[in-house]
Image 1 (cartoon, helix red, strand yellow):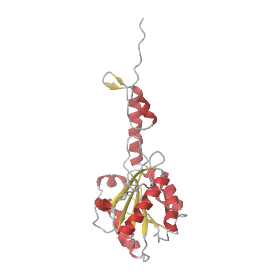
Image 2 (cartoon, helix red, strand yellow):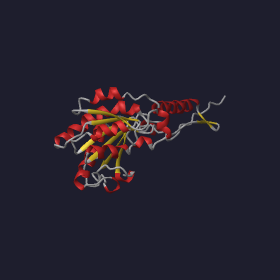
Image 3 (cartoon, rainbow, N blue to C red):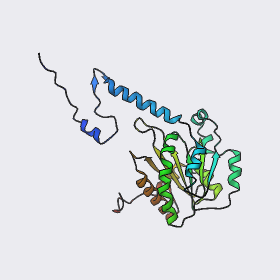
Image 4 (cartoon, rainbow, N blue to C red):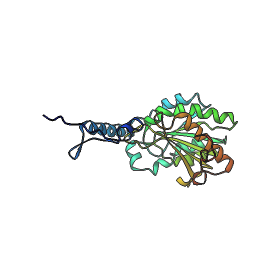
Length: 252
């Protein structure tokens, strides 16, 4: 009786270096059972991340020790279903939040805004660790920092309205990114110079995939701080602001 030889995919060794789905086996025209079940699990984790409950009050307590004050605001979205259906409402503050910020009379160099976005899991897992590294870098430069703003059910563009109302020169939005099939807890940072309602994504710089298995907290804080420094120096952000540190032989 002949022994059946097991054919090893020549790409299999690459699995040690990436979480991407590569070198998947086949049985006939279908995936192997283990690979199929792994895919279904990843899909379920991504769906769960989108609907993960955002504990905004708990986050206020967590971040309270990083800056002097934390503000809790609301967008015009009041539930997860509307957040997914009406992105336009997630870009605007509700009436009470607007009125609260209109009383803010202490303009600052930068304001940090935190929202659940499409993965509250990412926010609860990574925001405190990231800000604990990033805020001291900014304080060391003697920049003024507005109270951290936490706003539920927000889209990235809400940073323009918040930044403008608070008189901040720059705004940084920390938000849970759309979950992928290999990363349900990815945090994104979107920074803009001179926040004003009407800005487009071309005015923003994005630092993506912030998590221990992606861009580490230290590297992310270093990159965000570099971009903020250059934005302040050049008085711009977005497509005109490049991170050229590698080209110049700087940090990797």
